[in-house]
Amino acid sequence: MSDTSTHTSRVVSMASGTLASRLTGLFRVLVLAWVLGFTPIADSFNLANTVPNMLFDLVLGGVAGATFIPVFVERLALDGERRAWKSISSVVTGAFIVLVVASLVAWFCAPWIVEGFTAFRHSTSTESGALLLQQRAVATELLRWFSPQIFFYGLIGVATALLNIRHRFGVGAWVPVANNIVCIGVLIWFHLVDPTPMIATLNGSRDLMWLGIGTTLGVAIQFLCLVPSLFRSNLWRITFRINLKDPALKAVSRLGSWTLLVVLLNQLSLFVVLAFAFGIGGDGPVSAYTYGWSFMQMPYAVVVVSVLGVLTPQLSALSTATDYAGLSERLRFGLRQSLVIIIPCTLVLLVLAQPIVAILLNRLNATHTISAGTVLAVLAAGLPGFTVFQLCVRGLQSMQRAREVFYLYALQNALTVLLCVVLGRHSIAGLTASVSIAYSAAAVVALGALARHQVHIASEIWSRHVRRSFGASVVAALAMALAYSAFSWHRGAGLIARFSFAAVLGLVGYTLVVVILQHRVARVGAKDARLN
Image (cartoon, rainbow, N blue to C red; front, side):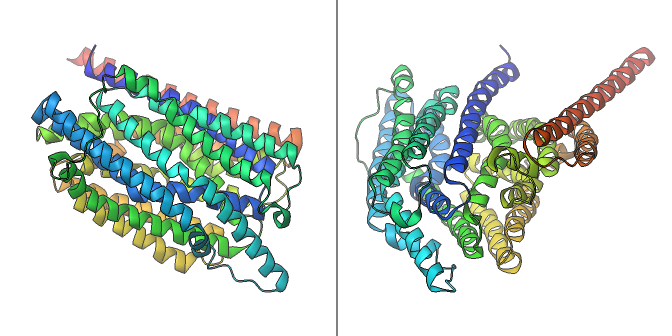
């Protein structure tokens, strides 16, 4: 089997698992919106559920994703299996200890963490002050039940890295399905026992406790689903081993110090975004941003994460061999694969964000502008830039250019915070635009950073395949916009029919343009062949 076909099969395996995970994750968001809506309870839940992810990224997640695979691949290439697995064991042991400590710290510091996120929200009356205190209390209790997620997310990250160096990519993409199913079940149970929850009576209740425990149980089961694959992947050499002088642990520490700074910047930036969102007030601004971000991430996760997941070991191997021509080719290939699909997804979300959110999250009601729809559309506008930025960062990480990755993220996050202050203090649209603009600007700088190391991929952004996808996407977007605006149904079956008509017409338009362009290319190729 050729390298390209092997790569494609691995991407398909990851993409299918990621698609299943994202679809069940989407359904989880729908159930969450159905159960909690855009309410103070929803903001408390989403805020508390976001913090473990942030803290996991801060203490290990970013370091694991950026350094574990390159360092593990390098050790296996230079030291051989026996010595390499001793080094890998030292890294895994260190990660385990860090995760336990981080989970305990999150539990003890939960009240101060929640207070920091809600600091920009100022009460204007006795009633709003009481509501703020109730939101903080519920978020604090949930965060304490969610804090073990940091430990389990860490184990999932380590296990996935180990499986990836054994070229097992699919299982890591599929296991989040189990987490989503458990959480959906927990949310449905919560709705059945308390159909109309009130934040004033929820704090300290058994229902809130089981909601927190059940959500964390989903993450634990996600890790347990990886265990059989770990046993089948010849990873029995992993032992509990502490060796602070191990070369792999030193490499992770050296690269991880820069990555840790990157993650710290990312979390500070996210803190500013969520704190400003909470400060805006109204009907669940934190939930609106969370739901919009989840929807935007679906095409990115299914396409780009799958491509990068398969490419990362190849990029690390090419970098170790100082084959920068091969590195450039692999990155261009990944960029082309990603943009060809991301571009049409971007335009679909730009045009149909409001009806998508109205149908899925707002009980088939599009009579007014929905904040989550605004967030989704604005984030979608920055999706191509976000994609290019992430791919460039992965290329630099494979070359172990941790310092340059830090500088890029410093630029991106500084722009985000600055734009939040200027545009996002009173507007969820301005707040979201800050994120999209910052990623798009940083992507341009990231392309230049790669070019400094003789890795040139910028030309692929406007290659023949990408131009074809862009042209077809513009036609599809215009067709969808015209079709959707031709009717004025805002509720129920009428809204579904209006959305479906626009989506189908867009798909037909996209397909026709692609077929026409392919036919033209084939005709020109046949003409050139006759002349030769």
